[in-house]
Length: 458
Image (cartoon, rainbow, N blue to C red; front, side, top):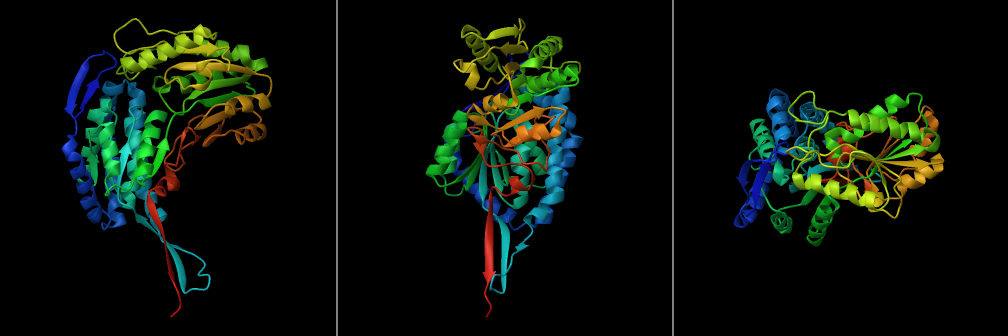
């Protein structure tokens, strides 16, 4: 049995401990979820949608409490925490309002029969393995469509998010989702593997690291269970031209330092045409150095700590290695001399393919800036990694920017914005960034039985 520990990354002190799931409880958890599925699947879809609508209302009603929990748990600044709570509410509400249309039976061309229709049916209990960086948003985009479809959910959150995961379960139950239709489980990785081996479980969705994704996908495949993975990213931010470099660098800095740089789809590689390069680097350095780093509960703070001391130390080691291998440190590069998991906003340049930083993901407030001679070279550099989550192209020439964006090997390509996520837009990547999609109608289609019913003439 593992223990979930909530440690405050602002102070480094342990906030609370939660007893983990016992090994002999794993099978019972799967069986409870299956029993709840038999009831939940027969609950009218309109009633399930109403439960999601009430969930959205409760998120908004309890927004301050929810936001405070993740500010304490993983150091998210208060304004960003409030924004995440609202985004989660928006996702539950979007599926409550649009989900019934996505579940509607579709009539096909009969093709020689009396009728050919496609029905959408739930598949059964699912396991969700969620990360700490967006505790509410990540869960909402998995749980909302699947609960609406009639599936049941066992949710294993990151061990540092024990308090917020309990709040989410409480809200869903208060909104009318049966207790065993959504189970918050303080489970270990080994217990997740045991769950996936249980015959009751029909699939798993994981958002997290490559290593965690590979491990879960392997167990799922061995047990013939479907998996959806959203993994790491090394998103390019390509600057082709700019009429206002000050504005461009402000947007770039804000996007990279949001959530202390701890986002899979954060822009991590800034690829800039050579005639703009010096101005861009100088502008980003200025923005990084002006960023107010401090207590995430303070409304004036722009960037809080990393999620843990170990996360901070990992980023510090990556930056140190990059500099030792020849990268140029333009600003930052070190932990901040204060208690907690704080790290200086950091800018690196002159990175080459021979360096570790060229191909790995740095999950923290570190921008890597590259100089290129042409849009063609920018595309080649952007695609020269094993990740493919998202990317963006910035230019006043929309047609040119869209042509470049269409050549990016990513699941989400943006022009003159980066990382926009909305309930009705698909989210997901390619290559080592994972497979499958969440949100919108695409998220509804991952864990359902798209069932054909064809009736011949008598």
